[in-house]
Amino acid sequence: MEARDQELKRELDATLHARRDLGEEYEPSLVDSFLEKVERRIDDTVERRVRRQLAEQQMVVARDTRSPQQPSDLNFGERFGFGIVSLMLAVPLSAIGAVNAGLPGLITAWVGIVGVNAVHASGTLSHWWDRSRERKTRKSDWED
View (spheres, helix red, strand yellow):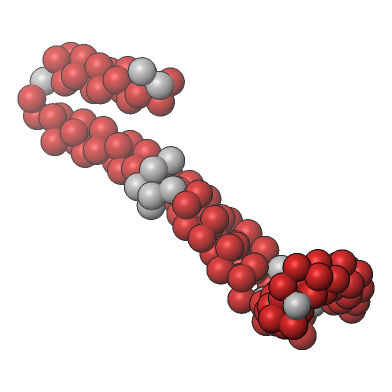
């Protein structure tokens, strides 16, 4: 049992003890007093959960605005570095494709290189990956 549950149990015991001492004529005011304490506790719990959910939503929004979503958002260094690495890998891939399969192998290698660069330039794969991870880690609205 949590400390707050113990506190609420002590309040209920005190209310019941006061009813025995004071008599039935004070029962409505004692019950109202106890119910106000319960309502305050519920309000505090709901407020705390709402604040936590708002903070989580603000973090998600802040993370979304910081992460690149569009190709124009990608910084120059990332695009330039990816292009250089792509061209460096294109030379051995072209050689392997041309030696083993001739012109069709060379064309296949370059179609793959262009495809990888197109996906990177569009940014759709990284955007999809970020969203799918976010959905898997999100808790239910009812959980603490």
